[in-house]
Image (cartoon, rainbow, N blue to C red; front, side, top):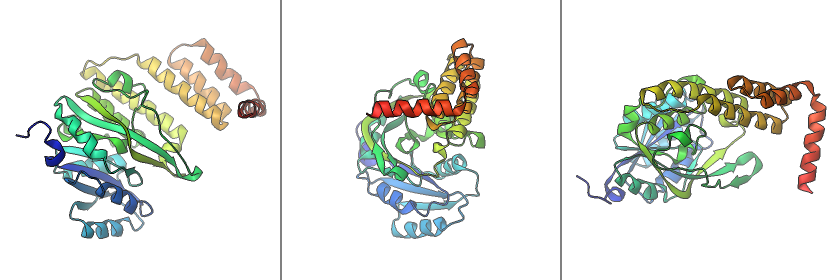
Length: 318
């Protein structure tokens, strides 16, 4: 039996990295993981049917470090690849990282000790957001981060990115791992976190210990696809929540989600789509103000909204 405080030096951690056409980023990601000052790790690379040189790179990396184990899995999507990796894992703790994200050297050494509390099933941390196409980065605040029983907060908005999460394997297995429904692509991690939040408590390290990298081809940059995926996620979780006596105002949560995306569509100049989304928000939970706003965006010529938006931006930038 491990003594309290012994996790840092004794517990093996399995890191699962799904790989799909990641030749451009993979070596740098692997390097950041292997450079952890927490050394008792195994790195599981899962090739999800790549058509580039990812498989060759994985094999070369495996030859250079005995902590790396590489596998091939027929293309089934990122959730399927992660589940495959979890099955191969030897450790009681599973960490996740995507093929293009990065870790700071102290990430695991600061997260793993929090599992000394047996109630904790998942530990996350902050992540620097790096936007490659704009050569910019930001550090999101910790204002909306929660610990303990987080379901009621997490169901309103995903609080953390996949590359920051470490979870107990027993709880991952208890909830069935990731749902590999392609309709969840982009939010399959949020879906898993919500399932875990029904059966265990969460904790976090209030530091930015990872770097979440955004490229022009990141799936998560496509608002319309992410919008639909989040609705699918909430519909699925609503059904599962009944089994665990977890309640929420589902209609209001979905309405707020629609409004959030409507505002994003306005910012991007998709005014007609914003109008449809405001109306959809009203249909989800009756709100006449949202309906009127939706009609206004649909009936007013786009050029008018564009002029107003540009004027507003000029005003606030001056």
